[in-house]
Image 1 (cartoon, rainbow, N blue to C red):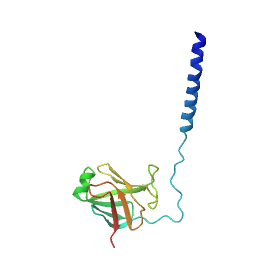
Image 2: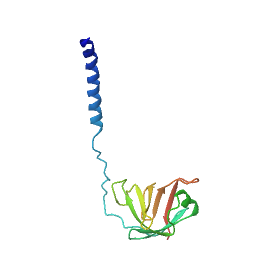
Image 3: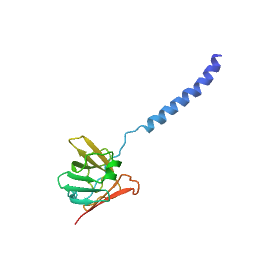
Length: 147
């Protein structure tokens, strides 16, 4: 009887060891970091950027005046409107990053503690910002700088 139990125990222990080794091999520290960018960092946005559902007015000092239309306010769950937000372009959750390679645009309203996190939907330039936040009739909002 003992011999029969030992015969079954060996493959179970071996399988458990193999599973633990596979699990340990899969749990390695991520090496995901923002890409290294060549050249000088671009200047901060300034001026008026217009899209179909909002207008952003950047002051060049990490502050933006936000004016959402009624449809977009509803989609965003009615954040503060026609007011100033601080903003940062970020690389995922790794913190602030230059806008020409950023993955997110985060807006923060100090008084209400409201944070809006938009996914960058294309390459951001000094004259164009494309963010993804789905509306019923369009998938991305493209903000184009007014001349």
